Length: 219
Image 1 (tube, rainbow, N blue to C red):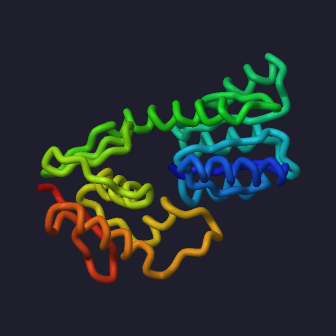
Image 2: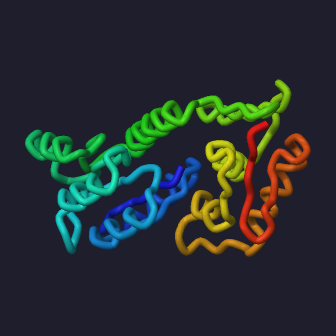
Image 3: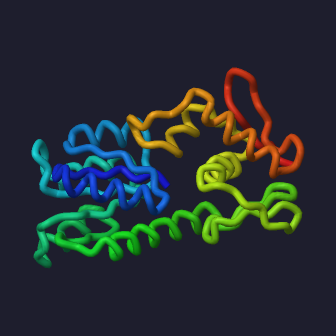
């Protein structure tokens, strides 16, 4: 899942990026609220981790702006403002969860997994198209009932295509789901993932629209 981390403490941000990336999240980081608002307007992440004490604009104003863009975007507030009044205000403004600093990383991960499970439930934990079944909760893929082993990024590509059955996914849109901003990505990376997937999936399950992108059509 793609996480947008909005945190001006660079040391903390680097540590979180490393930890979350190791846990399989794609993390993009911004240190200013106004940049975060613009980023969310351009493309919704799957989850936002928002610090309230930002240098350019108060985090509560950022949260209000997010809610004008999307009422459903999962937002975890991460802040040193730990009083009950601050927590209530954050939740009233639309935060989905609230974690006070200092915090245990395991607790943060547990709360993010709750968001993940909720998103999987909303998008259907089990996706089946033809002989292919993808389970978002267990991160398993079955072809004609047989378990197929995929790398994390192969799984993410397949999940994006299956969730958008009948709609073309461009290379750029797939890259944005797999890689953080600024992360060096070879020009043929998506093609390589697709090539490996095709070896493990039924013939012509993933179709190429040359010069446009990839699509899975209704069986």
